[in-house]
Length: 486
Image (tube, rainbow, N blue to C red; front, side, top):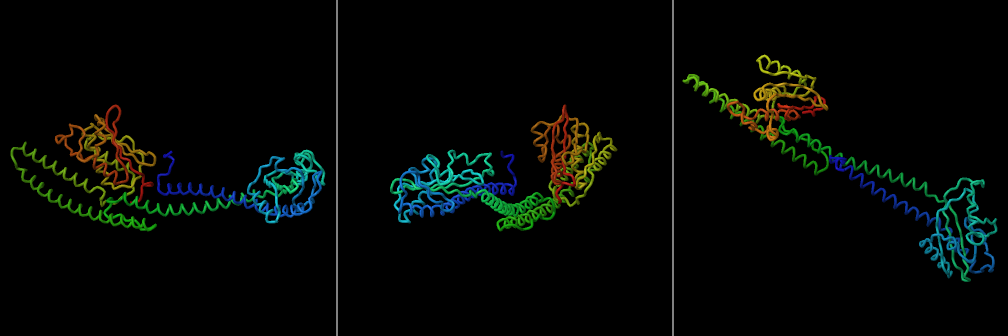
């Protein structure tokens, strides 16, 4: 499940806000529909209740004679009748307690003394033109026999071949009150349901509110996330150039404070790195001078075997010093970045090694447009090639493309490395094989330097053993089209 969730702050904010708004909109929609239904019922039942009270006052003052059910003249859209039973109980209609309370209150306000009260509201289906009210008020049992024609089966209201229009929904309000002589005054009023259009309008308004609030929430999320994205990009470049990486201060107040604190930190880091470069430059100068002087002094030292050992020791110390200084300066190179085809650079290096008789070859050379510092990248490749020749007998290079990246591989035919050595090969001064000692050369900084240079170009370095034997070192760099601007 977590794999499908957004990882960015703006995505998570948008998802949470969208979910909360969706739930709130659904709850609000349901409440609005319920309130609308209640308001519509009050509106539709107000007139029938008022008419019912008027008729009840007249019937109570002069009740009809006992015998057949007495039909009362139609009052507006409703029909009224006095009979021995009420239609709600005889037809088993659902009772509406709220409507019964309103009916009883209206009857009492009119000064009448009602017996039992019944009220029911239901949605029915009727033809466009129907005699359904008369049929509900006619005869014995579920119908009434009014002045109109009697229909024995109420289902005849909906005869498919009766010439009526297609059925539609309507709201039937049935009111009943027991008058003092024990009989029941019943009224049936049928009116339009009138909710489908309301539901559509309520749904449309809810959707519009949801869309506007969600758009505002997404705007706020993007306004918070955009400065953080700039901060991330700048943080990845801290120390990668001579100048401090500063972010444009924008967004809400707390985000602005964070960006200002980052800019202050970036300036301090840049200042510290500059001081480090000055110190390393002075250190390198102070160490190179005595080493050069010492080598001049031992040029005439006897015997020759001892002289060669001393010279070799001085050269190793000089190389170690140069590697340490180069590693310390990584990420702050002043060399400009150039867009170039890396396969051409690799091919030139292979030709230079071939001229010296070194076992170095190029197997694949696809075009690889990258943005890099050529001199610095040559240093990384030279370290890898020298390691391959020294410990793997030969070096085979290749340049290929994969998923928008450029891959530069250096393969050898050596024994490879153990799993522990593969994990620690990029650590400074690490030599994973016991044969890699001072007699074979190397200070354990070659792969470390190559890894630092690859990262300074926005790429990465990886090592893996080849089958059946050998080591493969891969520098992966983004193409010039996809690499972020420096």
